[in-house]
Image 1 (tube, rainbow, N blue to C red):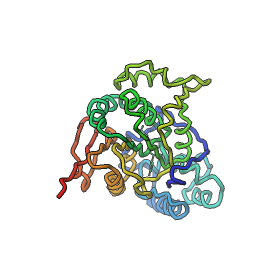
Image 2 (image 1 turned 135 degrees about the vertical axis):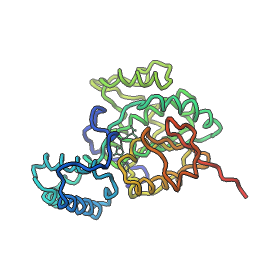
Image 3 (image 1 turned 60 degrees about the vertical axis):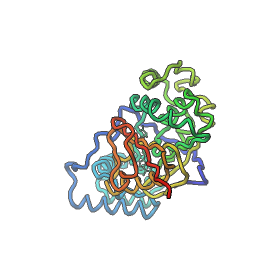
Image 4 (image 1 turned 120 degrees about the horizontal axis):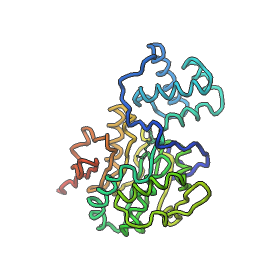
Length: 308
Ligand SMILES: C[S@@+](CC[C@H](N)C(=O)[O-])C[C@H]1O[C@@H](n2cnc3c(N)ncnc32)[C@H](O)[C@@H]1O
């Protein structure tokens, strides 16, 4: 939920690594070992979470949820989903732990560098006519994508006129995003991504080394606003020239994807740009409102309707 108009929560959590399961292999073909009774228990668990806290996972792909529920059952030391539900209802912190399990925060800087290259080439020239730019990263995870975009816009001379809004359903993800501090050991891979994404400067000029971390420049952060926002339950909160929602919709059922496409469409200014992940696309009825600007990298442009 969007709290206090881009409020901020100090809770901290574990950062997922790119080597973990990022959902890119998700499908809903089912997982061995779950009985009909367990499916019923999952329904009840998801209903309880929704009624308790308003987090709606009822329309997420089951394969992904089953894995995470099993994982949480092992860690909590329970053998049935109903016992997990009991802990969630009665033990402090158990629900929070499961919610964090459901949030798959795998990300990296300049992830899919060719996408960022295409963005530089195809989208940036069309953004120059705007005096003010609003960019929304929906499902920003721990922020690597947000800092990448800020660097790109800075190099293209657009950052000064831009506010980047970064949201995620996970409080810990938002807290980490705001820090802008990423493991130093990832910098070699990120430098490679940056160069492949069309970067031509010294990547290390964007961060200061702080023990085992790379702390990104405050001048990048000044253009960012962070908030908790849930695409399954919250609505639109502004109008944007660019929206990125990459590698988020893969976890959603077609019905939930359709709801989210409606929110993204409603939040885009006419002529605005929508970037999805490499395995994602727009589904009807929103499809007709967009033209595909770059088919390979899933960049869409919202059509400008002729005025009467
Ligand atoms: C795999 S990460 C993608 C991060 C980044 N966009 C990227 O492409 O590298 C998916 C993120 O989506 C977030 N997410 C999942 N369901 C969400 C929802 N209903 N509303 C907002 N964020 C959600 C998760 O918490 C996670 O941080």
